[in-house]
Image (cartoon, rainbow, N blue to C red; front, side):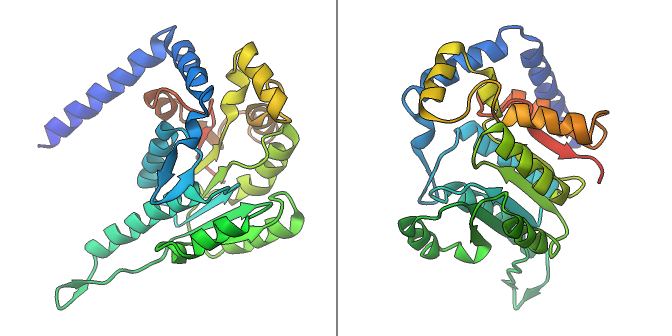
Length: 271
């Protein structure tokens, strides 16, 4: 049985290497992604009833990261309708359930022990979204802070929350300008636990075609040369020049094909 499992793992590993070594792989995926985004594809989905503005393949990547590293707390900046926060909470609830399934039982009944949590931060949480989140069955799995993610008071509150948990994962998905994301990285990067992930969403903006970049710039204050990836490169060059603290998980990025990210699934190797 174990041999069959290992055979499958080796098959997947070779599959991913073939994808990585194909010179046209990323270009074709980028072309298809930009085609989809013309239709605002990323807005089409929900997670457990709440709109989630994500590429579905990226949601799958988060699931793999959470299962592999089992964080106790996920900090997310930028929550919009709350779907990605609900998604993160559902993954953590599943981890709690898994722990409970293997734990002690009373009269054969499972005792669900909730120990994990999501902290969502957004500069504005609109009333209709707050009401919907407050009515959601998973509401006990998150708390929110309204305010700028780079405000010192907000950072202090997030740090206090992080101190209460053993393993912390961070997802950055708010303002995508270089300066804002760089400030977030300095504030929240240190909160990521060794063996957990730091994810910088929409770093793929740096890979956009000229036509797509022109469209983005007409709608947003960011684009090529001014985006999460440029901020991440500067951050890593300054705090981790030898790349010994963070390992970029290119295998995970490759296996999902299209993504809003580029070299920004980072596994923290040491504090």
